Length: 490
Image (cartoon, rainbow, N blue to C red; front, side, top):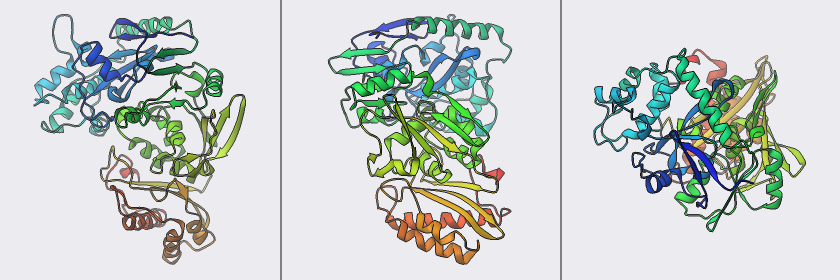
């Protein structure tokens, strides 16, 4: 095991020992490195003022860059990576970087508090070659909030900033050399083991090492992207000991696809899973796009969303409706569990101490099956779900031959609406059977009232989502989608 955290801060090597494994990257930058360009706004990954860029080796491409929220990222997760902040955009001659210059020319900053975060999101676009499409820019900036400038000038800056040319050989060489350098920094391999008075942190490199660690530490907190666990520290002030990080486990970061299914490792981020899940069904891809911000999707994982068992997690209802299953592992033993059976009750899952989610297997809809998913939230982008309905339906000769319906936000766990399903299967797909299915929902669920929605609202919305499904499958020429990237495709 290796005790020191090795990474690049810009181009400078860092090797940290005896550091609190729960220190956030934001606190490290501001308190230890005195780099105060990165700001704290919300301390929960919502406002984007703390946006930084993480770079890591990415095979033939050299380096892959992604924006993350420094306020909920723990310092040990930087091991083997490069950390870039707004200070690193400064050129040797003092001139502004193109994205900074574009912000100046479009008057994209007033008070300036949020500006470093916006600049880093624009910089990530620049590193990927630039962007002119308004929808793509909006998507990249959805996780950066501004209270005074307004987004128009910032979007204009994004369009004007340009980007790295695809044939820039000097940039390609820089990235290749950087990837080699980072790889060599941690080439001795083995598990990173941080020992500190405040707690322990382990980062295995293989699933075998992970399995052995969890057998030895069955009560450890398993950390993936930190988009939920990070808030346990910043908002709930929890002390987690030990932490076992799966983000460096190579064999948990793979996506494989066949003609009938997609298998997603537990360490795969939403951003990396997006395209494959979009090929399962367009609505699954759009659902992923609306999970948090790009910074959150660049860190959060599909496996973590499932393992935490939130009743309002966005992915489980869709995956349940598709008939997904998960692979659980403890030691050398694995078992497959239908996802709908994994969620036992609020805060409880069918997972034993020392057992971890290894992967999720998502079937593709069979021929003739239609899949639809609808997320209802107060904001369209980057908001927590009030109700989410997901449906897989096959209509043959005017009758409902197959039907699976799953909801989030309607109970203590994401779950199927089995009485609603029974009311439809074998029936004519018409308004009479639709009404019967809507009535059956009242027997499937007894939703609660909270700060996001009342129980009456939740039930009415769930019933209305069945109406939307009926319209989209029986009268597809009627427009039902007013916003969102997939609206024009429906």
